[in-house]
Image 1 (cartoon, rainbow, N blue to C red):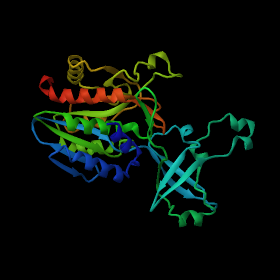
Image 2 (cartoon, helix red, strand yellow):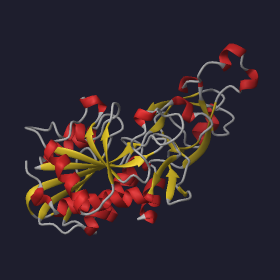
Image 3 (spheres, one colour):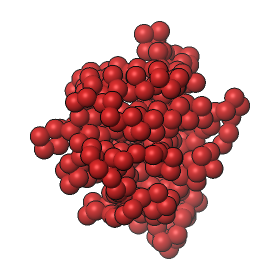
Image 4 (cartoon, rainbow, N blue to C red):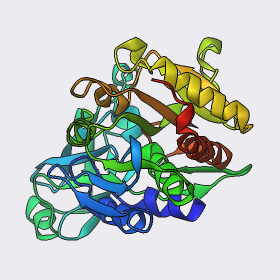
Length: 345
């Protein structure tokens, strides 16, 4: 599972440009499903044939990134953000620009030595940043394959920390992809399972919207990550989701503007966790949402829930998660599907 996650996390897959990660997911998924296809938007849909009910599992393949907006006369590159970035995270990052070939660069800005005192007190925004690939001119950059519209990812690979914890980019939501794939491999169920690797989640939950409409399952479980608050700088009221605390069951997110999970699904997941002695924690979040926010509103409605893995430093190149929590989440999802008869909706 750890090796699979590393491979997934290290592959680039910016929203709208998920070709490489999609190809990898398809190769893994086809081992465990009866049929597999890609829809018009680019979602991967694997089907494990069975009877009723039909369960949709969803995990998004895309990650946040950047896109080339302009190349100045000296060869420095201006960019836009794709997805939700906190600008300060970008500064001084190493990046990869994906064109006909991969070109490496760094995100730079005016050094503090040349700033006026009042400027040093201001946060540097992405508009004041640029990417330096070592080019000497616009023509030099273009000769090396750089052009308007190239997508850009962080130059970061997954590493192991101590105590069974890992760090890397795109753990949001390659962890969810691992949860889905490992569950497909292990689960024994007579239900029909739709496993969907969704696209463009980070820019509007787009792939989930179209795939759920086409499949219209009886229920859906989204495999995701949840913000862990167990580190310095977080108020006590926001510290309840912790690493090594187990799988996270979402009760509500975005203060209810996103998903309010179906009460029967929460009860079902909690009961399965208790009966199988799987560690879990409940999430009530004020900000952020997932693919479930649009899935549960599809057509006449799809009862939906979310199982997540706690994640520190979300939307950065140094996201941190616990392998124990990933295992707990896989176990909960697997056992829940195997006990689908206990879900009363």
